[in-house]
Length: 426
Image (tube, rainbow, N blue to C red):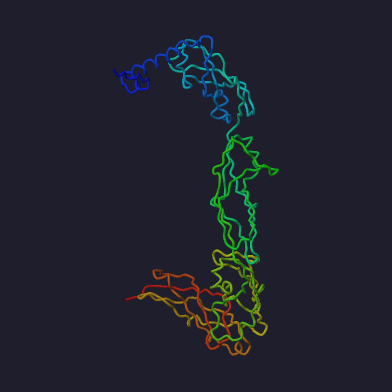
């Protein structure tokens, strides 16, 4: 006769056995917890949140708790085992209540802790709280805006290049937190690890923001908040080159000869820095044009602004050039212009205009031989009515006066005349 061997492991393949075994184990566990002596041996509930409450008067004065934040404690409780074993950290609240005597900012202010039962479970006793007290920082909330200091960003550059002032994705940052700590911040800067190889092109990187006190020591505080932790930094590396300054003139007589030799500019050249590829199209810097109507033997020196193309840097830091014109061999003469010879340009159809100015004295500059022979017939005067198409009545307008028959002479000064405009009579 064959006898089957009994196997304990095979029982766990029997669904009924597994069900009965599971119920039995659960019952044993429940009995163990239910019979645990929590009447005399306290149970510890962990991670119970601590709430710090300031008095109404302190809150109304603007005081605020800055630390600790999200503090938690351990609470030992005892009582009925069925109740005690159900208590969770959300069924308790630890309160740190501030004394009414607190009227101003204070650091490391000691507050005693007390526990409050929440929810429906109450058949137990709070034995102890760990810690029994906490140290808090109370102060007024403060904000201060700082321009971000870039003085530490000094990478080495190749001698043929120029390091422009670093540019940031944001030039300022706000520091906020307890007033006493905010007041200790002297500046916000960007630490920089020095490059080993001199730069020959623009560099981009993310710069971490660091708070420093008046002595240059870094401030690290969980109570202080920066509106941003870092900024994007661009170290603009530009190519250096010396460029000559070129003087330009407007209203110059078309046949004036040898004038360039009479012009000097100081300085003759300046050093600039800019994108390397941009220098392929720039061989000189052109100064703003000087109008010939402002030039005479007694008005022959001019301070002219030195302007650069966008993206360029004036390395020489010279922003004004002095232009001198040698007119020692030139002379001036005042000539009377007959107002009747003045013509009108762009006068609308159906309108007529007349000059009411009776006399006009015009100063002419030129070489002596031309000036001596100069007459009013060498003057051409015209009034441009552009922009005054709808005007009628009397007003004062500029008149443009040019020279003819004297190729090396020009009119000095600006001139105005009175005119009258009316619709033509049918």
